[in-house]
Image (cartoon, rainbow, N blue to C red; front, side, top):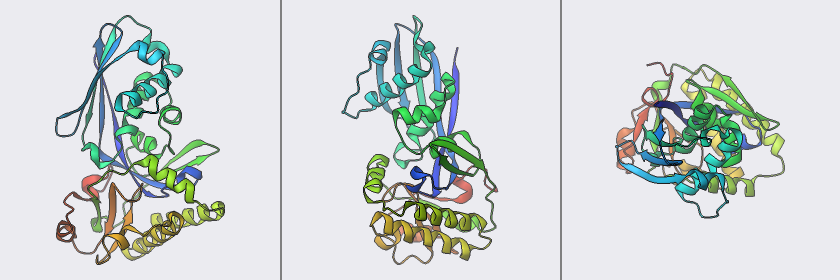
Length: 308
């Protein structure tokens, strides 16, 4: 019998990196996400096929049940090895999906281009969690790692505040529909950032005043959420960028690429790649196109549970 599961993509607006250490993070699920389709197979094997948003197959392979049950960690990072790791960890939490003589045909379908970095891995892990009725946060921790905010976005259809409390995910649903969302844009920077490398860089640079840094982050996050004018919102995200620039010992994306932009710009998630958020009183499409960036969304086009 065919089963289909769907999870939302994600954007991290505030709390990047610091969310790993317990800071509050403001995150937005996106209208794009990923489907997981499970069908019966045979021969105790999984025939896996993954489609990108344009309908092209970006991964296809066969995984034997025995490759999962006899799992041996590998330092070689391939898509197949990553899948086997996730499925092995899932089997430790629910081994019933391997306790049968048949197999599976599993298909994944992205509704966003894989290179955008909106959550190819997190949507997959959450879908597998739904399918096997296991805790997706736990599956993430034992397989891929990370804060888990992306899993929370996968599971929620509107804005959230997320933090870790003694390692446990705390998710609070919130409303975010200020009058100035029509001045918020999201721009893809034409390259996918490695989350693992970005996190490693953060861990090597974070200072010893972590509690104070987290408290300041939480204060700024609150300012972002409570902003009633575009100016106060812009001031808050610029303050956030300036503080993260110090922590990461790196220039802000506006300093590096968009120093002549008439408005505010904030990195989202891993600095140096994926999407940025731009706040501008004028439509900035012509400006970003002139810089070579052509994937641009309004708030309502990209964000789930927007005012549209």
